[in-house]
Length: 535
Image (tube, rainbow, N blue to C red; front, side):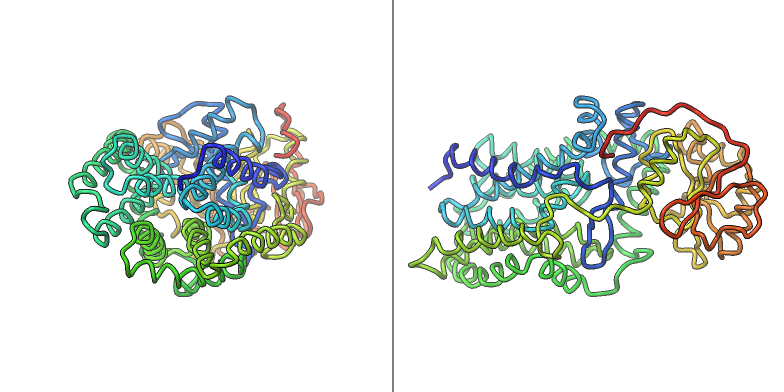
């Protein structure tokens, strides 16, 4: 039995009702992207800065962040968020709307995957009761749009396993192309799952190799123009960001991160955040294994989906919990399959899952609870908003930053960041920034060769030096303190431990707990646009 339009509409409404509330409740980057390790969603500041720049300044083909090109990933998410900001105004809701819509659409597709109504309902409830699903539905992150593309592609394959009909075939290729434009080679994972399925399925239940290959060619052709443009116009920057840093450095030899085996890292966190989903998925492996022996197409496709996701998580060396969002839809479908273990009381599983969802809502602060967008604010955010409102234009340097780079989302503030980096970790994240003068030492900043770095930035295609020296490296606290003393013309937001004991050039004011504003005694002021209430 295929899901009727009325049931699909109800599933979409249920997803919207559970995922939309609290869209603006958490400030930028304040939710925990990894609640086990207490790592906040820092990447949202990057996308927010870039989307605001696109909405206000343009540069649509080549997005920027803090004045420099942003080519780590293709720009589909930033395009969508910028278009939303242009259409609906400057707000957190506008910024996060594309991710929310992707979550609602992906939830509806997961419901539609299973033709049996109670199993479909169980899958939807497992998905909508998952805390990570809630978190990333309310964040401007690439992961939820990618998961939607992944789910949409495999939904097309499930509806037409041979990809013979025009609409599923073209939609399959379009979903892969969109995935590539969201998150580079990760967008190819649905194609890899389709290949695995094709190898395992019986000939009548699988697409012809030429059909699969044609879909790949169409997807690559759709994603190619932006890539070819960047390769032609910004070859050095494109190679450094897209290939060297994103794929090689983080994929093969990450500069920092967990040393845990990948599947242990992700499995531990998925179980801690949603034990109900984990246990149901484990139970669902039993009927899935039984069905695989019969080479049932739906089971083969689900197994291929799971295997592709788990293999990709293990292969990519950088450990980052948001990547595991890809596993939640197939885990929910596997968990819904455990309904087959209850042949006489099938309604018991959806009833239990509905009760679990309600229970999670009553414990919003628990790791496995549903906070509906609430999160612990970043302590530095409120003082930085207050500083922004003063209109000071001396230039703000944030020493030993703890604001998750929230300050970068305050238009016109243009902060610099002073890092304590005795081991050189910051420089290893983006080695080309050192060459271009985006990352400099305190000594280099004090004697900045603007002409040299401007020439280098221009040779890499950037016609201005706005990102010059936005990251400053100090080997020790003493060096950071000396840097503050050497620049009375600048404002600083610094830990109290770094503040000079005697500083004739700065006046001190309280900032976040344990931090101080060291404000230049020669202030410059400029008018600034007011911030949205929840920004």
